Each structure stands twice: as structure tokens, then as C-alpha cells.
Image (cartoon, rainbow over all chains, first blue to last red; front, side, top):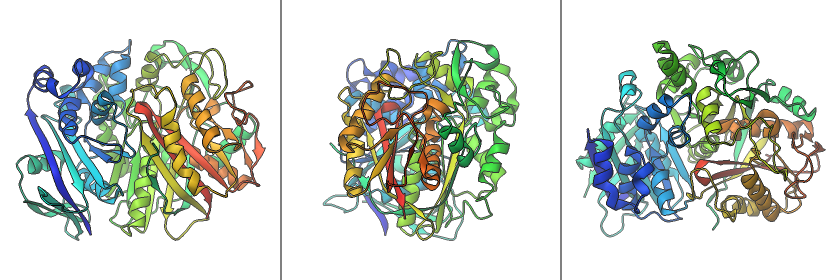
Length: 217
Length: 371
């Protein structure tokens, strides 16, 4: 059965908070000076992820529909003198990497997902098929600017990180199970985040072929 | 510390690639002839800039069109396997890339033409591609810089091994634009020199190339197998590896036990940068002592997130043909004695390790062999 138990969860609903406000609020979660080049998404995801104390034996699954939208916008506007720093954070989803590089935390497997309606289910499937004893499932979005007008960035900022295990252990916080279904379904990243942030249960289709059971202890 | 390993075998039912030379057969022929697809071109396309080595599909400009100019070639590449039914529950698609539609985003921002935005951001680009190729919605997207294709191969393998799919299509594409060439130029690892992978010289350089590839994975059908896959992420620095090269070895070492008893040749990442080339070739020589090492980015350029799949298709074609192209663009002295400058017969080998590396010290490798 595709089932995992939530051993820890941290969420951050930064909403319309500015990048500077987020940096100020979360700077204590990172080494001194480390936040200077971090994106807003890197800050919210990284702060949540750091609380899980990643280890080399963990598998990391990272999910973001739009990734570093602000970096992308700023990088595009840096031409013709392209910014090397913004290139690094806009060419690929780097939110989780920013935090882990800051702490020099190597890992074996890292899966970086993107997508829309199917992505939460797919990232859960990746987490559940990973052989590691503990899987860290994290993700989030950051508020974009002009890209929002083209459905190419999120209109709010949020981040989450969960520690998942195969066995329930003495005090699991919740349970996740994926079951096959014929019913059509879709679950966007923001809806998935709201379920986690508000600790709401769900039993229903969330993607082609998959039904999610999410329950809380 | 060694990374984990996925050791359940999956079969390659079909696999091919697209480069400026054509498909895998045409590209192999060109590589065996020592041809170089890279040509120096202005880094910002029509806006000019420094001359840097780029390998573009024939007739394709660096500046993106609307719709993207590469669609026809992608359709042709996938035509042999793109029958109806991909993207359904039992026939998932795994799309991987580093660039996705970045060229369209750049074109929009520089021109103001909103027509580009339908293909621009990552999810818009894949959504459009899915419609064009007739795929249903079971499309998983991975983006992890230059090891992206390996993520698709590994997760597709796990989905198959878990019995959750009958076959899986892994597709990867990366087409150049000023977005990416300008970025690498800003990082000062592009210059007017052509890359010389694994060559000990004063200054390193890389080239960039258009590329796409696919693999149809199956549990029951195919004459070649991905025997094992490995991944390791240093998380040391965005654009530099741990100076002792430990990350390269941590990724390769788990494959050694799976490869025990096999005579191997090695297809490395080999972009042409000096530090990474020295560390990578050193790790290969340590883990697979004596096995010949080649890299093909001196001809094709770095096809970024797609390089793992493009070069897998070429490795497969090389085995079928019986000859492995050498490390085009390079000459002695090389970092290790195992670097093969010239092409060689591969019929006495029974497997190849294919490796890729990426930003953030990400490493991925797989072992390909006859089924």
C-alpha cells in the first residue's frame, strides 16, 4: 500500500508579505548573512525544511509549480548585462537547495517536481516510492509580479515541509495514503498547502488515477 | 559517503535523441568522424555580444519564435513512439528539462510580443507541448538542472517496478536561447574557445547545444537494460563542487558493486571546465580503474537538463554499432590516462556507465547493459 506517516510538519503562509519582510522575519532560521541572496521561496521553504534537520540518509522531494518567479523576472530584466546570481536561481527550482547549501547538508536523492493539477499527487508518489527510511517532502510558491498576469507565477507566498516515514512510530501527526481510483480529480499546489496548513483531512480524487486519504491524529 | 542506489532492472524498449547532427544514428556517425557541431556565435543572438560556442539545430536561430521553432523536430523525434495513449494512468510521461520555455520568456520580455507567453513559463510550455503531442494529463515534470533527465529515468523506473504502469515515456528537451547562453556567459564559463573535456590546459571552456531525447521504459520488452541508477547531491555550492571531488565518487561508487564482473566503458559528463573535469575523471579512474572514459560535449555542447537522455541514446547507438566515439575536441595531456581521445571498438565491453552533473553539486549516473 502506498502509505506514509507524517512525523513532523511545518508550514508558512506568508501570503502577500514582501521579500524584505520575509527575510527579516525568518533570518533567525539561517546562518548569519546567508539570507542575503536567498529568494523569498528559498526563505519560506528553507526555514520549514531546516526544522526537519535533514540528514544524508533522507530523500528530498521538492515541489513548486512556478519556482523562483521573482528571480526569473529580475533575471529577464537584467539583460543585456545578464546577472550571474539571478541566473543560478532562475534556471532551475532552487528553493530547497538554497537552504541545504547554506547548511552544507548533502543528500542522496533529490527530486525536484513542477506541474499544476497533478503535481501534489506526483510528488507524493515520488515520496512513497523512494526507498529511504525518511522522506522530506517540501515545496511552496512565491508571489510574482508581472508573470502572475500570464499564469506563470503564484499570487501568494507559502512554504511547507513534511517528514514522512513508512512506519507510524509512537506519535505520528497524520497519515497519507494514495489509492487507485477511476474518478477524475485535480489538486493544485495552493490547495494542497491549505490542507496542510489548516490540518484539514481529505478523502477524494486528486489526480488522474489517484485518490488521497489525508488524516490527522 | 556513498549515495543510495536503485538496482532493479528496467528495459529500454526504445530510445533516441535529437542533436544538430540529427537522430542518434546520424549523430553517432558524426561523432565517430570527429565532427564538431559547435560553432562560435553571438551569445545574445540578434542582439550580438561575445562570440561563444553554440550548437543549434540546422536552420534554428538562437532567438525564439512563436510558436517555438523546435516543435517540428520534436514531433519528428517522437513520431516512432508517440502513438495514442501516453499520459494515461498506466502509460505515464515524465518530462524533464532545464530550460523548458525560457527562450520564449526572454523573447517576450525583449520584444513585448505576448504571443510568446503561451510557451514561456515552465508549466505553460509543458501544457502546450502536451496538447501538441496528444498526451493525457498523467505527465510528471522534473527540473533539477543538468541531471533532470536522470530524475525522469529513475522515477519512471520506480513506477514500473511498483507495477503502477505498463510502460513509461521519459522525454527531455533543452533548446538554447539568449536566456541560457547569456546566463552561462555571465558566469564566465563560456568563452570563444571550444571545450576540450578532460584535457589538462590553462583555461577551461564549455559549449552549449540544442538537444532532446526520449526513452520508453518497460519491465518486459527491450534488448538493453538500465541495470542500476545512482544519485548524490553535495549541496556544497551552487556552481562549485567539494574541492576533494567526494561528490563524484559518492555517486559512482554504488554502481561499482552492480558492475562487478563486467568490462565497462564510461561516458562522463565532461563539459570542459577544468576543476569539475579533473575531479570527475579522477573519480572515474578510482572507482572504475582502467575503464576508458569519453565525453561528447566537445562536439555537441552541453545539452543541459537533457544531456543524460541525449547521451544515453548515443551510448546505446554506439553499443549497437560496435564503436564508441572518442572525446572530441580534446588532446593530450589529459587528466587521467583512462581518457580516450580516439574512437574505439566496444564489442569486448559489456556495459557502460553514463554520468551527469549539475548546479548545486548534483550527480547522477546509471549502468546500461545488454538485457
